Amino acid sequence: MALSPEAEDEAVELLRALIRVDTTNPPGLERAAAEVLADSLAKDGLEPKLVQAAKDRTSLVARLKGKGTKPPLLLTAHLDVVPAEASRWKHGPFSATLDDGWIYGRGAVDMKNMAAMSAMVLKLLRREKVTLERDLIFAAVADEEAGCALGSKFLVDDYPELVRAEYALGEVGGFTQEMSGRRLYPIQCAQKGVVWLKARVEGVPGHGSMPRDDNPVVRLAAALAKLTPTALPAHATRAAERFIRGMAAAQPLLGRLLMPLLLKPALAETLLARLPDRGAARALGAILRNTATPTVLRAGSKTNVIPSFAEAEIDGRTLPGQTVEALLRELRAVLGDDVHLEVLHAADPVEVSPETPMFAALARAVREMDPEGVPVPYVIPGFNDAGPFSRLGTTFYGFAPICFPRTPKVSFAELYHGDDERIPVDGFKRGLGALYSTVRGWCTA
Ligand SMILES: [Zn+2]
Image 1: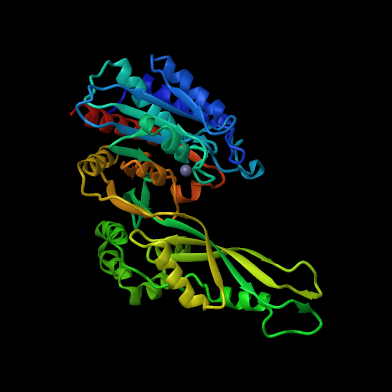
Image 2 (image 1 turned 30 degrees about the horizontal axis):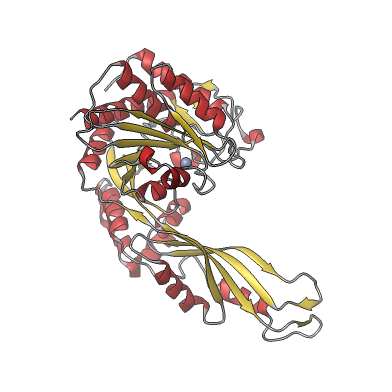
């Protein structure tokens, strides 16, 4: 639904005001951004609550009351952003500069756009005195980029009644992803689980002048060298199948025939090795198997002493449907019994079905925003606020709609945490219109 030009401009200015607040995490310090939103919401008579897990690590929750005949809908965005190296940018990363129809700034797509759009949707529904069947909640959270502990996880643990909802719309999805000229719109339905591990090898200390076969540094290094990106077995999961078949269906004939072959473990590796887009190959590879990436190494403190142990930290990720135990079994098969594994931190994978009335509504929103748009159920290799919110029984979809122009061709994936992060003003307004009509339709039906 096209909104009034005044409402669209108001949302654009709200987005720019949010970008101008530096919420780089660490340290985050989201309070000032939460206050920008709170002031804006209060102007329309909403009464947002500010809560914080630590000083200035502020999250905002606002609620537009409905009749309560249906369960609430939650709109959510995180307020923190990743660091930006200003010297590499065309415009200051916190300047919110308007240049040739684009707004530049850290957080323009990840994801202050959704914060501004969600606030605007609440403000408009309130302003227009629309009668809602259900409550509409908006949660703008701190600390997503550092793992959600001081934001969505804190809200779900300490204030569950503020954010409990039937469905949630948030990160990641709803943006244009061109593939062979087709305009796809991934909508997150699943994300992988996290299993951070410590791997340790022990031995007998000795003098560096006399090499030993059981040197833990050498044994650990040899074990880790086996952990190539394809070391763990491929699994064809339902979530990956939906994503790959959804993309394939929108492709020209060759892609339509070839892409589903990725779901055959015996062929996946060969096909991905031949894909010219290496970034896409890595992303696809990551949704076909559990992964384990060594990231930290520790051993010894003196050049002439063989240490008694060597340790590595491994970033493990599990597919939807897979467990911590399953990953450990796969890892032991590769690393051998010599390496002792300890789980440091784990979070379950998340998966919801795209066969719901809400997903159908999001698919309609995509086509309203972009008549050529093809919605695709998406599985992300990383994690976001979907994990904590799902613990309340909420069905979480990644949907923060943005319509990218055909030209100039700008890839959303490269803007995400990238230099010159920017959003097309027109595409933002279209996204706002699509979000507004979807939420209005859902909450009034
Ligand atoms: Zn994000």
